[in-house]
Amino acid sequence: MADEAKAKGNAAFSAGNYTEAISHFTEAITLAPDNHVLYSNRSASYASLGQFAEALTDAKKTVELKPYWSKGYSRLGASYMGLHRNDEAVMSYKKGLDIDPTNEALKSGLSDAESATVRSRGPPPSSSPFGDSFAGPEMWAKLTADPNTRVFMQQPDFVKMMQDIQKNPSNLNLHLMDQRVMKALGVLLNVKISTQNGAEDMDLPDSESLEVNRPELPKKNKEPEPEPEPEPESEELLEAREAKERKAQAQKEKESGNAFYKKKDFDTAIQHYTKALELDDEDISYLTNRAAVYLEMGKYEECIKDCDRAVERGRELRSDYKMVARALTRKGSAMMKTAKCSKDYEPVIETFQKALTEHRNPETLKKLNDAEKAKKELEQEEYLDPNLADEEREKGNEYFKEQKYPDAVKHYTEAIKRNPKDHRAFSNRAASYTKLGAMPEGLKDAEKCIELDPTFAKGYSRKGAVQFFMKEYEKALETYQEGLKYEPNNQELLDGIRRCVGQVNKANRGDFTPEEMKERQAKGMQDPEIQNILQDPVMRQVLVDFQENPKAAQEHMKNPSVMNKVQKLISAGIVQVK
Image (cartoon, rainbow, N blue to C red; front, side, top):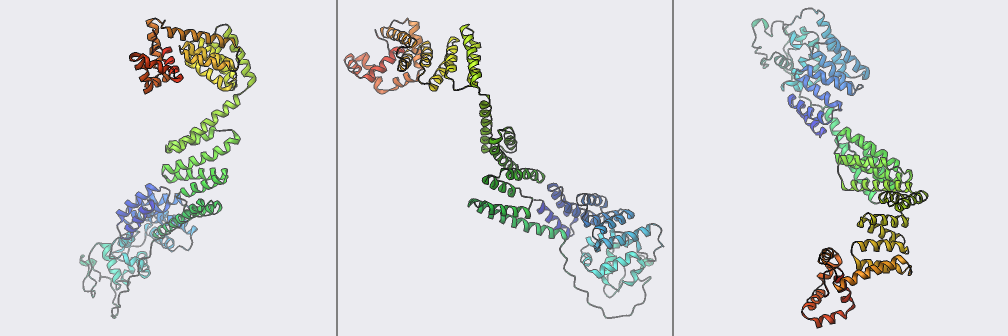
């Protein structure tokens, strides 16, 4: 975008539209504030309009950004000349010539500045009444701005004549036969001059007639006026064209790199991306693409370096925030690979978080979650200590005996953190939760205990006890029976079965009080298994037959599956037996 605005400014300058040129160069500077050529071009535009204070400011910025660029000192000297600060102009031109001793523009500027310095220190009075019109850089600005004389500025013989007149205005009479000089004089004096056959003078008082000091010259045939030479392309336009060509070539190199990347020819892909970077360092996608290749090759340090460079360059160029986020994400991916060895996930997490502040990409968010999970697992792994786990479990047992169940839970929890595979700690914490009435937590720990050691009978005892207190007698009965498979003579399991059978029989006899029955029904209706039974079309017909067709109901009860479901409904209080 900056190059486009710069090209527009160059075109406007070439057309003499200096105000428009300034506007375009200002836009380009906003987009690329460190481009010295833009300030140089705008300085020239300001000087062409006679706004030398603004031209000086831009010329100083040009030199600041590019101290060894000779054209910057040419702009600086012209600005000082326009402000009649001739000594400073001389110094500026000399500095430029120190850098580029053969630069003709600097040599000419230095000559003009030195002449102006001499005149300012008391030159002899001019023998020409028009001497002031040729003084200083204003003459060149006016001649460049006027379409009638602009083309002459590209003709060396005309420039040399004007320099001669500027050095000694009395020499004007020597060049009056040249129609170009006549036109230039008209532009400088802001008057119209007819140059056909030399018949008319300027519309001025008699004392200022062109013929006052005009010597007699021999008549000669009028030579044809030379054809104007084509205006050479400015250095800025050449630079713009070359930059555009380099960018186009860089894009071709990138496309080639992409093709080889897909073929997994990584070495060749890197060569093309590197060439693209050499041609154009203002597109960070070449860096992020090369980083992706390094990541695939396992060259994580090279990948991280390219990503860091892409982020830094992207911020300088004000690149799309998505591109900066991509570079940070790719860096985080490379760091994640090395973190598995170093076991340091904190920098990885920080990098992914920075990427998300630039652009909230779902892929980056997933990578961040994976890094945080890996860090947590590492911390848990480092925290593991079976010996300390046993100590904590014993402390929990002491508090359990003292009926200090909250303290017991605290130590059992610490034991589980130290050794999450100890089924005894889960069993003991389940017992503590049961004493505290925290049945869901107790049930979860009991099930985890059984998962870790399916042969541990006490785990079934803990689970059955929780289910019994939750009045899920059928489920508790099944749990106790499952435990007896591993310890047939376990007294806790046998006592649990006895209690469950008593409650089931009580339900079968309908011995519950109305309050108990209402409570059981409400709880049963929340049980997913009971809900599934009631939604079964077959069971719905069975329940209808129980009320309306006892003979059909008896036939249904011969089916073990139906009988089992009916028994569950009775235990839940949904079906009552009278």
